[in-house]
Every structure is written in C-alpha cells, then in structure tokens.
Amino acid sequence: MNAKLKGYTKGSLETRVAGASPYQLVQMLMAGVLENLNYAKGAIQRKDYEKKSLYLSKAQAIVDSLRYSLDDSAGADATENLQDLYMYMSTRIADASIQMDIDVIDEVARLMIDIKSAWDQIPVEQREVAMKDNSQVQQASGA
Image (cartoon, rainbow, N blue to C red):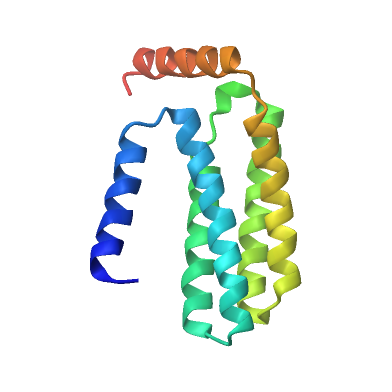
C-alpha cells in the first residue's frame, strides 16, 4: 500500500474512532480481530511468517483489550464467562502462531463471530441505557 493511501486509511480510522460510541468501539475492535485473523491466514498460506506474526499479535492484543475492558457491573457471571472465553481465544491465537495452524485461527474466528453476532443484536434502546448507566457508575466512582 502506498504512503498516501496508508495515511488516508489511518486518518479515516481515527475519524471513525473519534466519532464512535463505546458500543461502536467494541464493534470495531471485534471486527479488527476478525480482519487480523483473516490476514494471518493469508500470510500463513503465502509462507510470509513475519506478517503472520504481526497479524496474530495484533489480533491477540485486541482480544486482550476486549477482555480488560469488560464491565463487571453488567453481571458477574456473564463477565466472568467472557473473560474466560477471551483468555482462551488469546491462548489459541498463540497456539496458532506457534503451530502455524489455520484451523486454530478458524476456531478463534468462529468464537469471535459468535460473540460479535450477539453484541450486534443488542437493541438500540438497551445500548443507550447500558452506556448511560456505565457513564453514571464511572462518574460516581470519580473515573
């Protein structure tokens, strides 16, 4: 990709992030995991192991960010289950990198697709209430 196109793409992403709600940011992160997993698969198929490592590292970092950003007030059981699932996914991404195993990448992608599908189905009204409640909790805690 040439420098001008890279600059435009980066600027476009920064604009989308700046104007996104917390709900939309999570959607973007989930899409980023899927995108990087897909790129890693292509890199493995091309035997471009440097790019494979780059893309899997990015996917793993995003999964870890999703795990660290979970809101405990949303329900302890749901949060704990998601934390465990994200930890499993992060471990499997490391496995895929070491083993150069496309099937493991596909497994992680399927898990992320399931999580993202559930996230995408949250009704708009509930998104707004959840974000408002979370904002009030943060203000009360001084965050």
